[in-house]
Image (tube, rainbow, N blue to C red):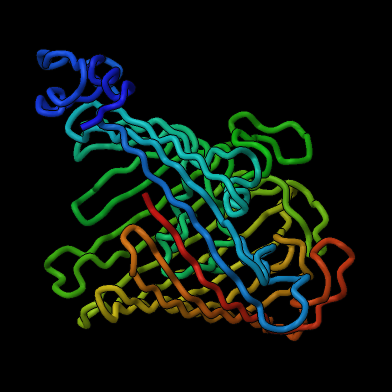
Amino acid sequence: MKVNKWTLGLAALGLITLAPAVLAQTTNAPAPAPAPVPIPLLTSLSATTLSGYVDTSAVWNPGTGNAHPAAYAFNAGKQDGFNLDQMDVRIAHPQDETGWSAGYVAEISVGPDAIGIDAGAYPIRQAYVALHMPVGNGIDWQLGRWDNVLGYESSDSYKNPNFSRSWGYSFEPTEHTGLIGSYNITPALNIQLGVADTVQTEAGSINARNDGFGSEYVESKKSIISLLTFTAPDSWGSFKGSAFYAGFDLGEGGATVDTYGAPVAPHDRSELYLGATINTLVTGLTFGGAWDSIEHTDVGGTDGDYFQAFAGYLSYKITDKLTFNGRAEYADGLALGVAQGVPTFNKVIALTGTLQYDLWANVISRLELRWDHAADGTTPFGGVGAPGSGASAPSKKNEVMIAANVIYKF
């Protein structure tokens, strides 16, 4: 067997180990050496994990004119073509949960969806120090930049039942910079409570503190992040593993916009979230539900904009490889279109059906059909021309999307 010089060099340094039989077949190979003494660097990296994914899609919107796409997250710019949506790489060293221990997470995301997640600030998706304290049932801390804890859907597409994001996810924050702790009150009840610089993910800065208008901020003003999770125990029979969520965020929301997209006064932001994923008596069938309510209060105590969304989920595992996921939504609020610069509207209904077939190892492959309908009588979709280039006015109440999504996880 031929072994190259690079491999022999690594073996000589003790970074890898070659079997004696392989060494014997190698020209001028050194004699087997005693077991290598662990190198401190390798010892510190021994529990480090590397994971990530590549997310791709092909999207078709039947009908002429896509200048004004529906303003749910990551939809703009994907119409009628092939897309590289996101590439994500995560390096982590989990902490030992038996004593005073520490770890970290460093996660980098790039691509159009990644820009939408981190508000275009940096390719840093998450970066935090993880600390475990053996107090009571054990407290786990995250200090740095970490994912938002509220919401039914994740910023990682492969973790969601559907390829496209819900309207509720589209208006939730995606990350926070701060400190958050997690504690199991009982085996079934977990609480997460944290403090962050802002409630809302701020464009252009990971460590944002001001209100977006350059005015002086109050140094003691921070935001509260919280989530309570109940997981059904084994005694619930077929319903065991079902989860129920209640969360509340309150604090600095940064700059906002009015119904025409113009900046308005700085504001506080509050968000209430209720969610559930319920297993059933039918094997492979689960139901889910989510309610998001977001309100802004402008400086001076006047009411600002608001948003709420209701979503129902159904998932049925037809075979070991084939799963159907459905979602029905209703959302209303001021300036639903502002997020991606499309004409504003106040009410929307959306239905999404997704077939997932696991043909290849480590690959998620999905085919999705989605329908969005402006339920307030407006026509916010369509229009000929490229977005932002003087495109024609929208003329559609409905937007239909057919998408194929392929994700490789490593």
